[in-house]
Length: 147
Image (cartoon, rainbow, N blue to C red; front, side, top):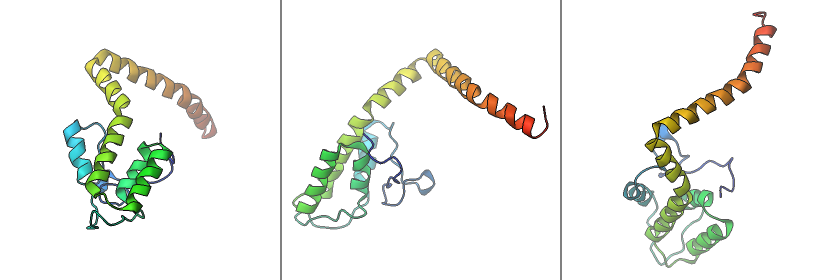
């Protein structure tokens, strides 16, 4: 459940996630590759036993978009309590990302396995887009004197 769709999602380096920054988490990677990507999220050198800062945490920033409010609150509390390392939090994040996007990965695999279904979906999307854009384009052509 994405809680705040307008918020910028942090990338693996803590900055705004962006392909141009090279700090994205590709959601359709194989399991091992996705886990490696998430385990590579940059963190500081806070000792395991010490509380972790929740401000600007890329781990928490991503986690809040793929977890329930109660799971997020528990993760935040664990950050503040100390006694766990960033590796533990990254594993939790990986599990949440993997589970959250599992239905999308399954649907993508189904579509990719059936080229005719992919063509049907693309055609249906083009028809819907044309139904929306055609009246707008007609008004535009009339307004500028092309009709």
